[in-house]
Image (cartoon, rainbow, N blue to C red):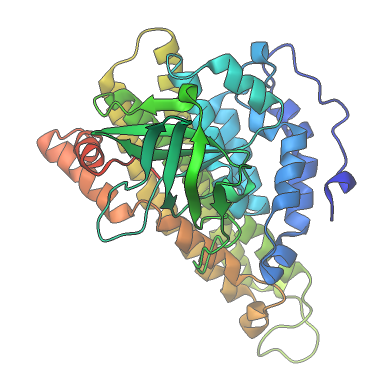
Length: 419
C-alpha cells in the first residue's frame, strides 16, 4: 500500500482555534483504521512502517501540539495522549516510534529559550519528523559520541543504539561530549555521514526502528547545539514524565487491541471445546467472563493514562501562567511512576488472558495475537518499572526527589533523562 492510496481528510487547513477531540478524531481515525488493517501483515513480513508514518505526516500528526499561530493544530496535551492511545490500538509500534518527535515538540513548548521555536515549528508544520538517538552500547552507561569544532565547522562522530523512530526521521535529536560538557544536538538525517540500521532484535516492537545510528563526522549547524543543564530539574522531570507517558499510552492502546481482537475472535466462532456439534462460544458464560475481564483491564489502563495526561497538562498550564513549582513536577513524576506499575501489570495480564477465549486456534501465526504480549512486554522493559517503584518508596520515606538522583547519574554519564 502506498502513500497515495490513503484518503486525505476533507480539509487539512490549519484550524483557527484549538480543536475539539471530535475534530481530531475525524482527521486521524481514517488513518488509524488503515494502520490497523495492515498491522498483522507488517508484523508477519517485518515491514517497516514507512508508508504508515507518511500517512500520519500528511494528516498532520506531527503538528498536533504545535500552536495554531505557528500553523499547528493546537491540541492539548491530554488530546495528544488520547490520540496516542488510539494509535496504539491500531499498532503499538507507531506511538513509540513517534515518541521522540512529540517529546521534541514538548521540549520546545516547555523551553522557549532553547533553540528557535518558530524555525522548528515551521519545519514540523511542513512535515519534518524528529527521531531520537541517545543510548549507546558499551561496558558502562555513558556518552562517547564526540562533538568537535573543526575548520570546516562542527562535526559529530559516534554510534547510538535504541534509536527509536530515527529510521523514519528527517532530523535526529542526540547527545555528545564536547570538551568537559554534554551537548544536545539536532542532526539532519539525510546526509551521507548518517547511517541508520534496522538491526533492532527485540522480540516485540519490531517495527520501531530502534536500532543503530552512526554519525561519521556528521555536519552540525551551531544553532542546533544545546549544552545540557542538569541542574534544570523541572525540564528533566517534565521530559521524563512525558517519555514514560507515551509508553503508557502505547500499552493502553494494546489493552484496547486485545479486547477488540478477543471480541472479533469469539463472534466469528461456531464451535466450543468439549461441545458436540455447532455452538456459539459467545453464549458461553466462561467466555463472557473472560471478555468482561478484558474490558475491565482495558478500562483501568485507559483511566490511569488519562489521569497521568491531566497531571502533565496541569503542569504545562501552570508553567505558562508563571505559577509552577518544582514540587508539582516531582509529584507528577511520582504519579507517572505509580501508573507505570499498574498499567504494565494490567495490560500484561490482558495479553495472556486473551488466549483463554479460543484454545489452540488462538495461537495461529496467521492471527499474530502473540504480538500483543510481545509488544507489551517490550514496552514494559523500557525504563525498568522496578527502579521506578524504588524511587516512589525513596520519595515517600526519605523525601528524595525522583529526578535528583537520576540527574546526577546522567550528568556523570552524559546522557539524557530518557533515551
